[in-house]
Amino acid sequence: MKETVKKAAAPMMLALLILSSIWAVGPASAQPMPEKHPQIHKAEKFLHDAKHALENAAHDFGGHRVKAIEAIDRALEELRMALEFDKK
Image (cartoon, rainbow, N blue to C red):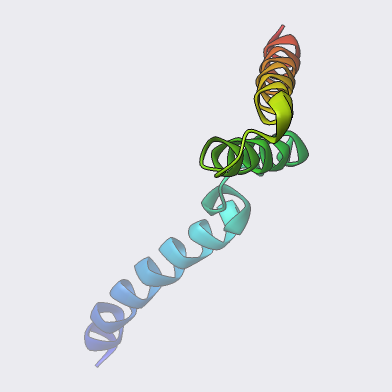
């Protein structure tokens, strides 16, 4: 009887050991790192969407549409440089 209990307890002990080690490492390691600079990435998406809308506009608005697209390109370049600066 004691031998049967020992044989039954061994897999349970192993399972508890595995579960406790998983719990000790915890969800922190299972979760992805938070996105770095989410505001900049959100601004980039917004600017890309605005540029796409302007590029597909039916009118040139007296040349202002082209100037707005150029300003968006400059803004996107500034955001790219800001992210590069943070890597240093």
